[in-house]
Length: 335
Image 1 (tube, rainbow, N blue to C red):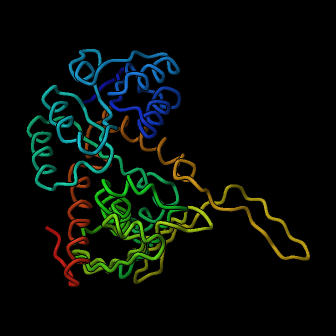
Image 2 (cartoon, helix red, strand yellow):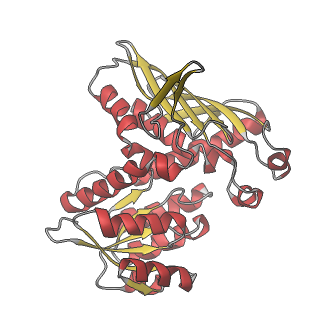
Image 3 (spheres, rainbow, N blue to C red):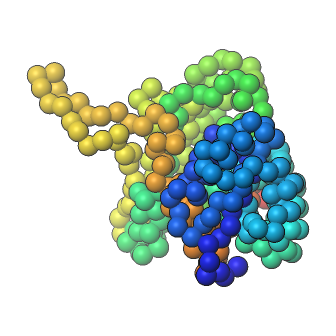
């Protein structure tokens, strides 16, 4: 899809994430024109449409509309496959929030239809577009790190989600670590071929009672032989902790946590810095904007998707392997 005029967008699903995407498209991205939003909760879509000055339609009408070129799928995970298939059949360019599905067979079916339809597709792995994380990827691509040997990713949330959410989330590997699995392949520049996972309930016994864990470590083996460790925790009292490091034959590249601001206080009690962000929308605000700029550029110029169908599938497959490894106690090949 190579176009000179603005790309006409629809957003399906305007909960917390979908509303944020609609606001960014409407207010911050030149070359994208938000036409309409849709949600099964009509009050939600009416509210967003009124706030942004766009139409509120049903999801079916959004897909069938001739005045929409691309659709952002921001609905619940269990609807993603059906909506991807419907958008592909209608010839719409697709942006889909992660994950596509908790079922790898359903993922493969949906992506096969995208490929057959030949429509542009991008998955919402926004951390790829964070300037500090991207700098690690760029350093690896530019050869500044040399041959990659080791990578390390830390991902810790300020607090766990509600238990009712955990029960339907698919578990820590596919709900939380999926971003880190994508970052591992992205920054190292080599796919994950094997996963060895360990996990525990260290924060809230109710999470264990819901069938999940709240603390996890995995060791990944990449196709090029690089080894990556990822640690996840559902609760870091000091804030939203997100760090990436890649080490190689020439040196290392790393991204650290951004502080809320650069101010510090020094007195007889010591030196105090500002805390870390406590909400992922604060931590990754810039990345969401850059993500939509990348989507626009992709549709306008064609070429390779910044976060392709294969990029969408790979972390799901790795997360499924991690879950199997946790159960069996052995490393598992990624299928």
